[in-house]
Amino acid sequence: MTTCRGIVWNMGDEIEEEDIVNYGIGIRGNQQLKVLNARRIYKRIYTGGYASKVKTNGFVITFKGNAIPLEFALYNTINNVSPYKNPVILCKNCYRFGHCANQCRSSSRCQACGETHNEGTQCNKEGEILCINCKGKHAPTSPLCEEFSRQKNINEAMAKHNISFYEANKLFPRQLDKSNLNSQHFPALDTSTPRYIKKHEYISTTKKSRSHSPPISKNKL
Ligand SMILES: [Zn+2]
Ligand SMILES: [Zn+2]
Ligand SMILES: [Zn+2]
Image 1 (cartoon, rainbow, N blue to C red):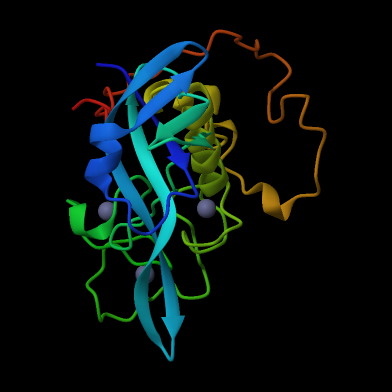
Image 2: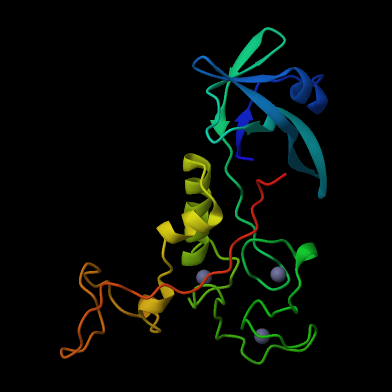
């Protein structure tokens, strides 16, 4: 079944998730879209060093169909619907994107060097920080990470065009394969011309696509 997710705000504290599923309806032109699931959005606030979850008046709503409704109607009130964008998740165990540490099936990795030396063991590569995701000279948690921006673009495209991770991933090819050299150590070059190509080499325009394993669709219910 094709589904899509949107965010609706201004819903009030007393509204329950079941109310939205049972009585809410998505409106797109003269089309009515059924609600399949609803989840209230909570925000984390910190007071005196303690974190607590606080209700917001927003809900993430899953609708039937491949395009989100423009409006959402519940009990004679109508609110706008905006596309829901998945946050970028970085695993704090293996430092790969797309899952959290409690779902991680990889062995624990060192944040500094990216290797799997035992926790508690002194990292002997300190000072030579290397991001395992983009091979840049920063920690994988750094906001400067190219792969972090790529993951953000993927999530935005998925929300905007309601496409799968697999499709969105193809829209933003990884920069890693272009060169093993770290571009941060070189002055910016004209990126429109291919670099590091020897004169006698032909530039192949049809790059062989790698085999990807199909991603698990989160939309399947
Ligand atoms: Zn992991
Ligand atoms: Zn290390
Ligand atoms: Zn990086």
